[in-house]
Length: 227
Image 1 (cartoon, rainbow, N blue to C red):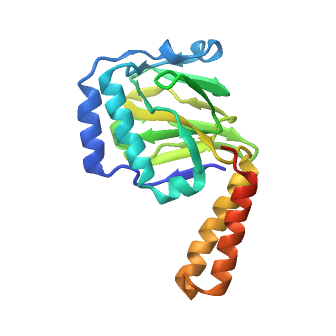
Image 2: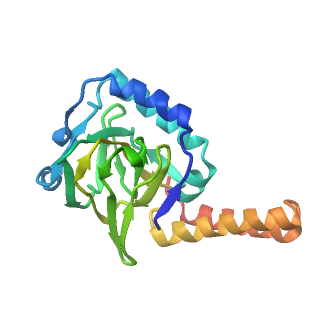
């Protein structure tokens, strides 16, 4: 499942976050690359061990908890501390697949990367190129979203960032270990949750069919969840 999550950050929050990260020093993006990615990656990145990166990452993670759509779709067990990258003219990230595991240094644990997320932090009219291109069984998808919007997609997907030809593409990117490892099951639960919410608006939250469907949702979540 590939999902556009609008309005994770408001324009004011985007401006606040950009003021924080734009004033910080940046480093070569390959500081966090695996061997495959390093061959294709040309960008700069906010050093993840700095106080600025930790503050900015906490800012994003807090915003995620306020997004019902993100929480319903991702069913997050663990969110890897958000990272931040920037692409200027001529910079790009060629075809690659994200590592299956990421080491969370601050807690000394590894997370399984079920989902990848990109939170756009630059107005799409302020730069040319820089589209996120994701390939899956349904085809090739180009993504370039308004600042504050997020795209969520399976981390197993082949994807790339097209070369930037004008301006700067700035984004936060991170991975999620979901309570539901399997993408098909996670999609089923997401669709079921949306249907329950829509029906509840029509017939009322306490209607018996809604209570029954909600129980079925939680019983499936209980059956499939990995803690």
